[in-house]
Length: 297
Image 1 (cartoon, one colour):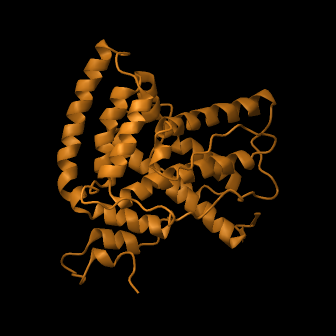
Image 2 (cartoon, one colour):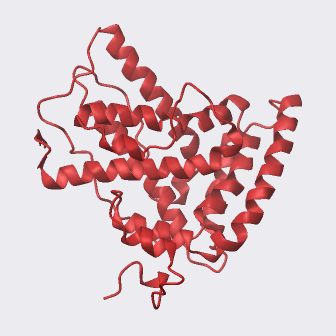
């Protein structure tokens, strides 16, 4: 029976080892095995090797031009609806099956992580907007913009509720992991046409200028800065789990110090990886039922 990594090599060469095979076989970072295989295939793809360097330079030039344009005409072009229709079309027609899997998974696991935190903070119940797209039509429903808004709204509502009622950040005696799932997306057939070749990084670099063009400056900058909330969400989770170990896996940090929007595409991939590792930790705790002395249900 073939393993998900067998496409990466035919014969291991000590003088020319495949770095993505090494990363796939390494088990030091907790991550869903299907996600890991998809990410390593994506990294090893021809698109990542040959298209990405060209797309990367092109994207930065276009972003600079849009930045200047938006300075003089900040509200001339503003249509989240058109943006998400373009994103849905691009994902369906040009993005590889592995990259689409990683994108779709991110919305699901991100929603589950927020649901986990909300359910395990004593005395707080917040309105949530879970995003769990099942097909490309769901992408058209402003899903990328709503994902960014959800993060900030969650942080604001959680802390406003705690401060208003003068509540400490306390966790329940029994940890609730009922919302954490292991969806492998076997029910979705991602397109595999000859045009579906773009790897994840290339797709994000191409989509970012469209994001910048069709959103307001506030929406775009907020979306880029929201990536640094990885640290905030990780701290919430560590306080609930009573273990700081997974904080070392977070690379997007210091949300009070904004970073240039030109690095947003790269940091978005790191954001996805941080979410995947935290979600995997929660899945493993749910499977084990009682780990690190924490009782779960």
